[in-house]
Every structure is written in structure tokens, then in C-alpha cells.
Amino acid sequence: ACIPCAAGQSSTATGASSQNTCLACPLGSFSPSSGSQFCSGCGQGQYSSGTGGTVCQQCDPGYYQGNQGASSCSSCAAGKYSTGSGGSSSDSCVNCQPGFYSSLPGSQACIPCAAGQSSTATGASSQNTCLACPLGFFSPSSGSSSCSGCGQGQYSSGTGGIVCQQCDPGSYQPYTRASFCSPCDAGKYSTG
Image (cartoon, rainbow, N blue to C red; front, side):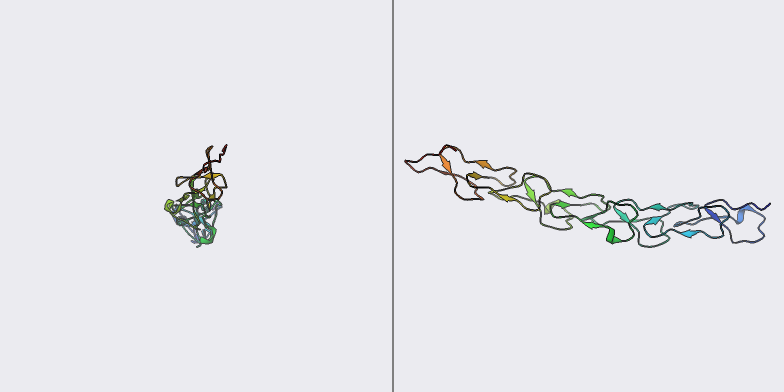
């Protein structure tokens, strides 16, 4: 009886008398069943990093492969990310949204700017794009694309404000986006 070459191998030899004619599938290819004459190349979004592959693996999130017959996947660039596996082109890598950044290639998610900061940059690859809110502004949560101005009767006297403070009794602020409150004039008062 003729014995088939194992899965992960192939042979084009006819009349073979030895198992030595069964050759392991090379990197980037596979043979899912026994008795194969040829190994098939892995498809886009897949890879086979070893010889004798019986299946191809999907590229992990944060990686992609646009070519067939690949032995590895390429990483999404810094400033981009991907959440799904099996990415078949660099288009599967998405820019980080404003308020977020990704400093490392192969990211599955972007990192939010901290509370008290904001960033308008799309596809940011550095935490340096996260800028502290200026005087009179605040950002209460992480991942903000803009800082909000303090309201009337409030102020923020430092950069990187997370909240605005209320004017103390005896002071007032009629404008928004203020960094201080003014004392009440003689003959007037404020309870806060």
C-alpha cells in the first residue's frame, strides 16, 4: 500500500519508495491534509512562521500582512492601532483619535491623554502631543481633544486644571475662562 505524506508536507515525486521525498512545507505555506502534492501559501492577513505548517495563523491585533506566503506580520506604525486579527493591509491600522496617542508600533489601543490635558492631533505617536490646559481652562476626564473654559464665578489659576474653583466669598468673576477672581469693591459684598 502507498503511504501518504503527512499533513504539513508535500511531494511531487511519482513512484517514491522513501518517506524522504515528503518535504516539509516551507515558511509561509501550509498543507492541511495528508497526501498533498503541493503546499499552499498563506493568504493575506495570515502567516506561518515555521516549516511543516498545517494551518496559517491570523495576524494578531496591531499587526497586518498584505502579501501572500508570509512568515510574519508587519506592525502598525506608532500613532496607529488595530483591534481585529487578520489585518490584510496597512489600512487595517487606524489613526489614534484626538486626545489619544500610541508611542509603540503594534498597538492594539491608543493611550488617552491624562485629565487636565488635551490633544487635537490625529495619529499622535508621542505623549508630548498631550498639552496641559492653560489658565482659565480645565479637562475633567482623560482622552480629551479640547479643554473647556471655566464659567462665570469660577477660575483656574494653574495649568493642567481638572476642575475650576468657585470664587471665594468677597470676590467675583463676571467673565468665563478666568484665572482669578476680583475682590468686591468697597460697599459691596459676595457670599461666594
